Length: 325
Ligand SMILES: [Zn+2]
View 1 (cartoon, rainbow, N blue to C red):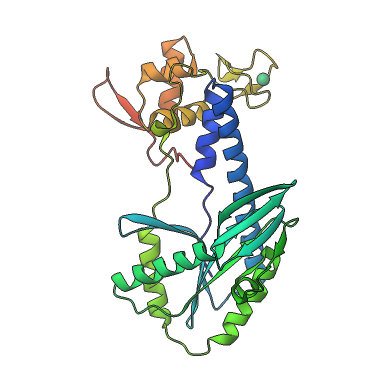
View 2: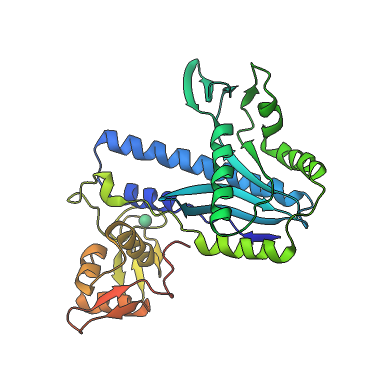
């Protein structure tokens, strides 16, 4: 049973909004673009893991995707967690390309890609640490944890996995994403004794769901040029900024595209970049709608939450304007 689906990563939403809305220096532009492409590839790998997990018989498992749990003044993150009556399994998804030499004896991974060698922290150790943090979190919350196993799922189908030291952990704990379901089976065979009741599993699931804190990137730490913001409503068809309001529609002066809701994405960008509060003056300025009357009509139709007096009224997203979905 899927108890928690994977959320779309907020970091991707934020990076896209920044790249749409700022004129950046070439260095920062390149950095953010490559970060976006890494995050997108990582998310694609996680979705692939979800797909392969959904293909095997998981009726015995409670599955939670994408958990971020605050614990001991930090957070630990789990890409996928499977809970059964006999054991728990932490799966970490990695999207490394190229040739991957695992060196668990020295806790690193050597990637060779296009002739360039790069060293990364050992994913086996990272996932082992997540499992240990989960165990400690459960103990702190008065549960007796079952055995907690862990796997590393390599989603890049072109990647070559190598185990030069012939380590047991690499053989058992690392696999291509399509093979992960088969590796789960071997843990299933290993643990025969039920240690968690269904009631306990439900309690643990509830605790994890309640503790989960979605990650929101801190825009203020990104050194963005706040005086280089691109205002206006972006055309969903040709990406040009500056759609104009005519009667019930917005029209793109470049390609002629008509839209009834392009302003919603512009407002979402504003909330993501400047925080979840806007005045009607900020709204008409950011969307570049010169008529106060038209701007006000658009704003009120969005059914946002509001507070304050008529003049200085502040609008916030509220339940009718989900920011991240
Ligand atoms: Zn257009």
